[in-house]
Each structure stands twice: as structure tokens, then as C-alpha cells.
Length: 185
Image (cartoon, rainbow, N blue to C red; front, side, top):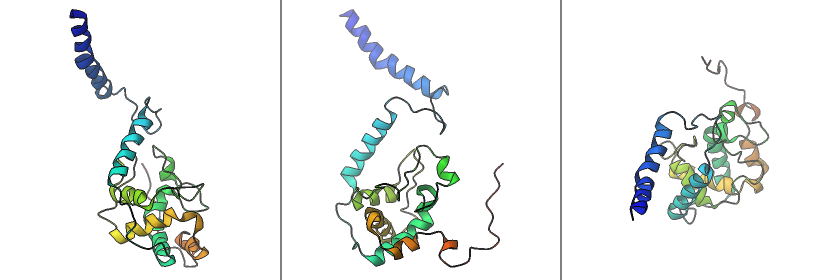
């Protein structure tokens, strides 16, 4: 019985304390270039998908049509492309420095296999510890739905929508003058 109680005491008190001190002592990998912890991705993805499955809207509140795709393309270009990339362009410096890497949503299948409600949940709520922000305070519900249905249909959008996804300088309008990237110290 003493052995059982000692094992129980170690399991309940000592193991959590060792894990706690591992994290607060600065030994845990927290830099974007560090290797992931064992099971880190599995635990994080499991929690994320369980939450999304529970809370995501089951149907889109707007139609999947050309005008909403074009509006969604404008939202995507202005708010999402900096991290997730624009069609035909390389990943930005910001995206290259992120961990985990933001998925390029217009390469491969992107999120076209996700329900629009799942993408809407991610846009509205963000994803902790990934760099994906919540857009609830900066985009309207309509804009979040427009970008969500665009991404759900990204593999079958028209040339007009693809044109809207191009950077401003390539749409035929001149690029803004006197705009310089900030210098990093």
C-alpha cells in the first residue's frame, strides 16, 4: 500500500512540478526556429478541431456567387495575403518568419475541402499561438463570410476574381508612391 501511495504522490505532485519547472526555467522550445515538442502539433490540432466542430456555423449566411467572391478577394488581398500569400507569388518575409508556417491558401487544395463555417470560425476567432489573429473587431460579419466562401471555392473562381487577388500594382493602377518598408533594427 505504501508503494502505491508513493507512486500516486509522485504522479500527482512531482511529475506536474517537473513539467512546470521545465517550462518556467527557459528550457522549453518557444522560438519560431525551435523543434516542436513531442505531441505538440497533435494536442494543439486536436483541441482546435474539437472547438471548431462544436462552435462553427453549419451553413454560410451569404450566397456563393461572383459578387461575394470578388468582395472576398478584396478582403483576402488586404488582410490575409500578407501571411497566407497571393496566387502565383512567393511567401512574404513575414510568413517565412512565422511558426507554425501559415498555409498558402491558393496552392494545392488550400482550405477548399473545409466547410465555409470552419474557415469563418478561424477568421472570426483566430488561432492561439499561431499568429492567426481574430478579425471580429476589424471585419464585418459579411466580410468574414465573403472571404470564407471565397476560400472554400478557391479552386473554381473566375478570372475576374483571380484578377482581384493580384497585388495593387498589377491591377493596372499605379502602385502607391513614397511607400517604403520599415527598417528593422
